[in-house]
Amino acid sequence: MKFILIPDSFKGTLSSGEICNIMKEKISIHFPGSEVASIPVADGGEGSVEAFIAAVGGEKKYVTVKNPYFEDMNAYYGLLSDGETAVVEMASCAGLPLVEDRKNPKLTTTYGVGQLILAAAKSGAKKIIIGLGGSCTNDGGCGAASAAGVRFYNGKGEIFIPTGGTLDSISRISMDEMDPILKDVEIVTMCDIDNPMYGETGAAYIFGPQKGADEKMVKELDEGLKLLSAAIENTIGKDVSKIPGTGAAGAMGAGMVAFFNSELQMGIQTVLDTVNFDELLSHDSYVLTGEGKLDSQSLRGKVVIGIAERTKKRNVPLIAIVGGADDQEIAKAYEMGVTAVFSINRLPQDFSVSSKFSRENLGYTVDNVLRLLKI
Image 1 (cartoon, rainbow, N blue to C red):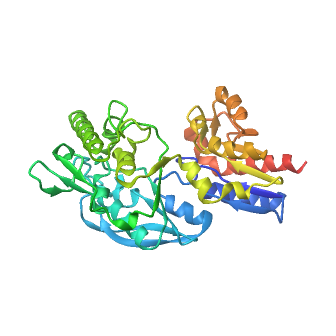
Image 2 (cartoon, rainbow, N blue to C red):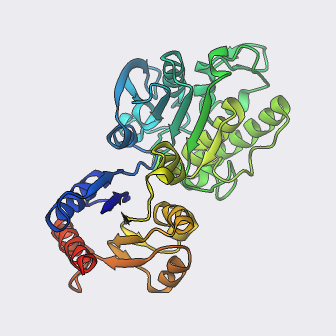
Image 3 (cartoon, rainbow, N blue to C red):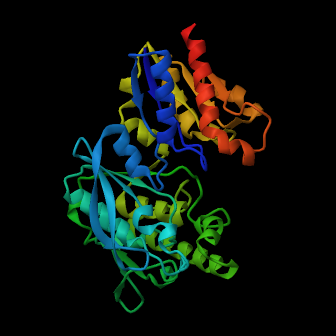
C-alpha cells in the first residue's frame, strides 16, 4: 500500500513534521513495507524553509542581510533539491520575534527580504516561493522593493527607503533600476488570508496592534498604505489595494504583486505544486491529512480542503485526523472530497488538559484508523 502524509500543524501542540513521524511509526506497525511519503506542510511563516526541505530535499543558504531596523544579521533561504527552486520566509529577517521589546511598525523594514530574494536569484533559482507571515513590518513591501532596485522619491526628488511611518512621503516610484536578474524568475507568494491592503479589514487595522501600534498609529499606518496604493497605481497602472491578500504581512502582499509581479497563492496549493503531489497519487494510495480544528475557515481552501480538491479528482481516499471539528461543517467537508474525519480527543476534556496529551491521543487515533483499514 501507499500512504501520503500531509498534515498541517496542530498549533501550540504538534508540528507538521512531528505529526508525520507519529503517523509513519504507526503505519510501519500495521502495514510494514508500505511506501510512505511524508510532506510537512508549510504555511509561509517561521519554519517554512525547513518544511520544504524536509518534503523534497535541499539545503539552507545563509546570507548577511538587514534586520527590521537596518542592522546586519545572518538570515537564510532554502535552495531545494532541484537547484532551481528557492524558498524565502520573510520571518527570517522581518519577523516579529526579531524586534523583541522594540516593536514599532512605523520604523521597521522588509529590506532584508528583498536581499534574500536577490541572493536566491543569483544562486540560480528560476522560481522563488515567498512565505508571508509573522512579520513586524507595515511598509507595503517597499523595503524589499528598494533592495531589488525600485526607487522611491520624496517631494524633494530624493531617493529614500520607505518604512511604515514614511509611506506618506512617497511622491514618485521608479521601476527602471529593478535588478534585471529578476526578469526571468517566477515568484510565487504564499498567502492564506484575504485581507485587503488598507481599510478596517486591512493590514494596519487587523495586524498593526500585534506589532506594537496603538489606535493613533494604526490610523497613520492605514493612511500611509492608502497613499502608497495611489503611488503604485500611478506607477504600474494597476489598483492592487482590493486584491484579496494584499493586506498580508503589513501589506507585503501588495508589494509582492506590484513590485515583483508575483502571484498570491494559498499556501497549500504552493506546497502541492512544489512536491508534485498529483503525480504521487495512485489508485492504491491513502492520503492522511489533518489540522488543529476543522471549521468554516478550513472550507475556504486551506490545508484539508486544498488537498481534497486534488484527491477528489483522482478518486483517492482522504482521511482527516483533527484536534477538533465543527459538526456543522463536516458535511460540507465530505461534499468537497474528504472521505472521513476523526477527532483525536478521546475524552470530554478542556483543551488546557487535552493539549498535554496531543501526541498520545494522535497516536491512538491513527492506530485505530489503520486497524480499520486493515480489515
